[in-house]
Amino acid sequence: MSKVRIDIVDRREFLVIGGAAAATLAALSSGALAKADPADAEALLNELTKGAKPTEGKVKLEMPEIAENGATVPLKVTVDSPMTEQDYCKSVTIIATKNPVAHICNFEFTPDSGKAWVSNRIRMAKTQEVWALAQMSDGSFRIGKTTVKVTIGGCGG
Image (cartoon, rainbow, N blue to C red; front, side):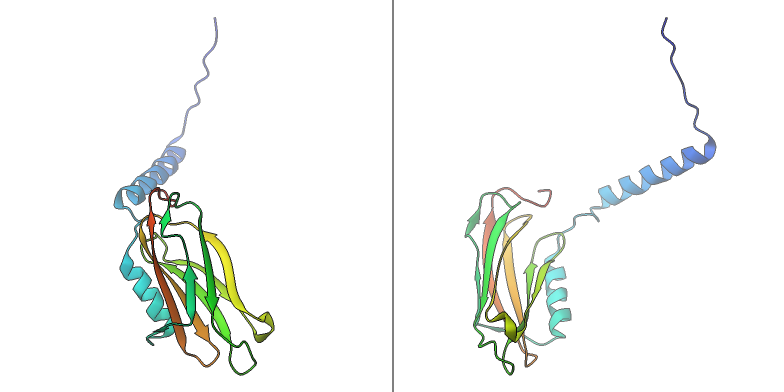
């Protein structure tokens, strides 16, 4: 005969386990863990620019028109800037308008960078617009935008 071992959970352990399970279920059922809201992207843009309206142009954002797999979508950003001590691109921020987290990544530059360009791969939850926001040394902002159609989402979609 085999013996079956039964561990008894005391009241305190039961309450801790039950509370953790309830909190997890509440978070999952409310959608708080992965809620994509385009208003978050606009809020992030306003926060980064401190309300200034970025001008289009001088930022080239290259991405595929259709991404068969949102788990790894290539992007390339090039900013037309002389990269001198007086005039250079300070940073580029990538924003995805319908991802659960709008802020994707940020890249910093100095005049010593020589060129303001980056190449990377990002995750995308679904078809959406992607923005590349460049902050220039004079405090102005430039923006490049593109739309990518995602057939299989990479952020749990």
